[in-house]
Figure 1: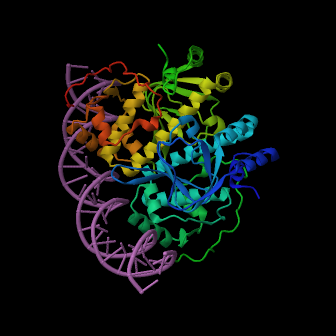
Figure 2: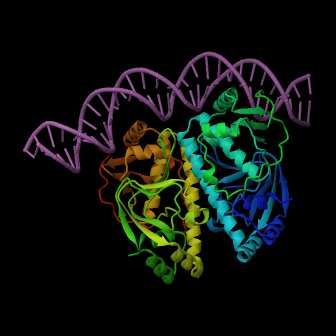
Figure 3: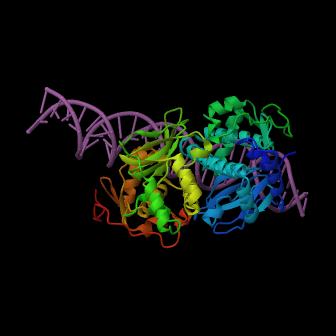
Length: 254
Length: 254
DNA sequence: CGTTTGATTGACACGAGTCAACACCAGTGG
DNA sequence: CCACTGGTGTTGACTCGTGTCAATCAAACG
């Protein structure tokens, strides 16, 4: 069973058996980090690159007035700090939202790999550039979509990104974060997110049960939020159907 | 006199004389493009990389309802499409706001340079990663700042970015774009931007005269918008004072 | 069981959008 | 030379999406 990193990078393009093995071997130094704990702080100079293997984390910034803006959700397979080798310092914080497993890849190991395996280097490039594309979509989401469409778009995006790494079924996924977290990611208040979710449930677009989200009809949700997966730049035929996710697809109740 | 590209990349770290010369030689195929014209369209597969030499351009997306979200302002020295080599397709549009001069660098030339000059490769990396950091700051701006602070933050950022390439003095720059453009970049309406600008003028934070913007007191503006230039990841001592910009520092009139 | 954290809901306030009118140019053509 | 035009900036009146505050509820937990 491939790890999330190989699985994710394979979404860019096929990887050879050796490349898969090399990536497999990179995943060592696995740590478990409890929920709501910082992985990296602004100003830090990490000497290794960190990958999320399990759970949800986020990039975020706290403003002087205490407001928090979540800049990106990090899901399994995502890098926390791939930019820091060139930029030096972290310019924002990274923290867990749920309990997470992370792997630390030493600078030396990464440099060696990228020198010997140009295919992997290219895949890593792809990964950071897609992160940037996701960020652009985020800006559009916050800037010009209504709260309801923005939440719908976020869920559409998460469905695809989580499917890539086997953490979502065709129609749903576990989302172990609070409504407050969603609010801080979209520049909304927690109260309003609550109302928006209620409205999305009423419209039969989603169903929520505890931490599990069911996208009743992915296509309808995508259309509603004008979601177009093109910006994720997936290679052809890279979307597995994913294993069924824990909780079922019951009716839109809560 | 160095071109804007060398000037910008030198903000990351010192460049050797040869590196400067190599960068100098890359700038050929210069074109002049009128205002309000697309440079790149979504879905396109450009075979060269484009750099802005002069003028203002932007990345943007149009939503189904016709709303436009500007995702980034491109100023002299910025790349329009450095990501497209890896990602393949453009996932958004790029268009001019004012008349622009652009240079096209062929794929072949760029690959050759980056193989021979690791220092330049690193600087190019730095450039795209800083673009990403700017994007993160943009999200924070739109998501969690008031309209007034967001505009103030944008102006603070532009002041620094334009100074890097000699297009701003210590306290001002030419901004040949409309209030509507600013609105679309911050997710606001043109009317509201107008009111915000009026308010910033009243507070003596900025002074506007036609296309020229004067930042009366940069430090005060930065404090007001909680601007911290750390995210631009400038190397030490890389901020030239810049030549004086055309119009003077008159009183806050219009 | 109290305690705590997160979800939910209602009442009310406010920032920002919309609509519409007008001012001010720069460019155009009669 | 001067109406005419279109684009941009400005302003006021009104509306509406979201935020704020506060109370209640539900589930998790030591």
